[in-house]
Image (cartoon, rainbow, N blue to C red; front, side):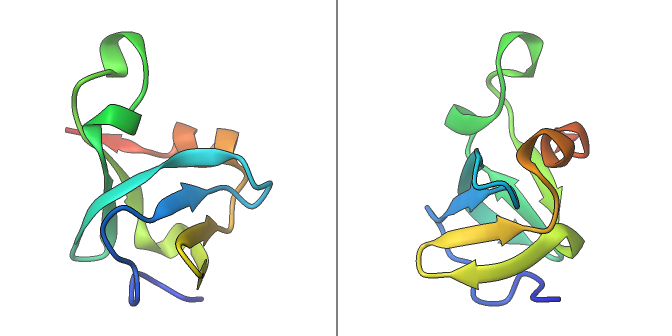
Length: 80
Protein backbone atom coordinates (compact mmCIF):
# COMPACT_ATOMS: atom_id res chain seq x y z
CA UNK A 1 0.00 0.00 0.00
CA UNK A 2 1.36 3.37 -1.02
CA UNK A 3 -0.35 5.74 1.42
CA UNK A 4 -0.14 9.50 1.07
CA UNK A 5 3.64 9.87 0.77
CA UNK A 6 4.63 11.54 -2.46
CA UNK A 7 1.20 13.10 -3.05
CA UNK A 8 1.38 16.76 -4.02
CA UNK A 9 -1.03 19.61 -4.63
CA UNK A 10 -2.89 19.60 -7.98
CA UNK A 11 -2.32 15.88 -8.68
CA UNK A 12 -5.28 14.13 -10.32
CA UNK A 13 -6.98 11.43 -8.25
CA UNK A 14 -8.32 8.53 -10.31
CA UNK A 15 -10.12 5.34 -9.43
CA UNK A 16 -8.75 1.87 -10.15
CA UNK A 17 -10.89 2.01 -13.30
CA UNK A 18 -9.07 5.16 -14.52
CA UNK A 19 -12.06 7.45 -13.94
CA UNK A 20 -11.41 10.96 -12.54
CA UNK A 21 -12.35 11.30 -8.84
CA UNK A 22 -10.92 14.73 -8.05
CA UNK A 23 -7.86 16.96 -7.76
CA UNK A 24 -5.62 17.12 -4.69
CA UNK A 25 -5.89 20.37 -2.74
CA UNK A 26 -3.63 19.16 0.07
CA UNK A 27 -2.80 16.19 2.29
CA UNK A 28 -4.04 16.39 5.89
CA UNK A 29 -2.55 13.63 8.01
CA UNK A 30 -3.63 10.36 6.37
CA UNK A 31 -6.30 11.79 4.09
CA UNK A 32 -6.40 13.66 0.82
CA UNK A 33 -8.37 16.89 0.64
CA UNK A 34 -9.90 17.36 -2.81
CA UNK A 35 -10.31 20.82 -4.30
CA UNK A 36 -13.74 22.41 -3.87
CA UNK A 37 -13.94 22.79 -7.66
CA UNK A 38 -13.85 18.99 -8.02
CA UNK A 39 -16.05 18.12 -5.07
CA UNK A 40 -19.44 17.08 -6.32
CA UNK A 41 -22.63 18.59 -7.61
CA UNK A 42 -25.83 19.82 -6.02
CA UNK A 43 -25.65 19.93 -2.23
CA UNK A 44 -22.17 18.38 -2.41
CA UNK A 45 -20.81 21.34 -4.38
CA UNK A 46 -18.71 24.12 -2.84
CA UNK A 47 -17.00 22.34 0.01
CA UNK A 48 -14.06 19.99 0.40
CA UNK A 49 -14.33 16.23 0.25
CA UNK A 50 -11.72 13.88 1.67
CA UNK A 51 -10.33 10.52 0.56
CA UNK A 52 -8.79 8.24 3.17
CA UNK A 53 -5.12 7.53 2.49
CA UNK A 54 -5.82 3.83 2.89
CA UNK A 55 -7.51 3.89 -0.53
CA UNK A 56 -4.31 4.98 -2.30
CA UNK A 57 -2.88 2.15 -4.39
CA UNK A 58 -0.01 4.08 -5.97
CA UNK A 59 1.29 7.47 -7.01
CA UNK A 60 2.32 7.43 -10.67
CA UNK A 61 3.59 10.58 -12.34
CA UNK A 62 1.06 13.33 -11.64
CA UNK A 63 -1.75 10.90 -10.72
CA UNK A 64 -2.91 9.27 -7.52
CA UNK A 65 -4.48 5.90 -8.33
CA UNK A 66 -6.94 4.50 -5.81
CA UNK A 67 -7.49 0.83 -5.04
CA UNK A 68 -11.26 1.25 -5.55
CA UNK A 69 -13.19 2.16 -8.69
CA UNK A 70 -14.23 5.83 -8.89
CA UNK A 71 -17.91 5.19 -8.05
CA UNK A 72 -16.95 3.28 -4.91
CA UNK A 73 -14.31 5.84 -3.86
CA UNK A 74 -16.79 8.72 -4.25
CA UNK A 75 -19.32 6.87 -2.08
CA UNK A 76 -16.63 6.61 0.64
CA UNK A 77 -15.68 10.31 0.57
CA UNK A 78 -16.04 12.33 3.75
CA UNK A 79 -17.43 15.86 3.59
CA UNK A 80 -16.64 19.04 5.44
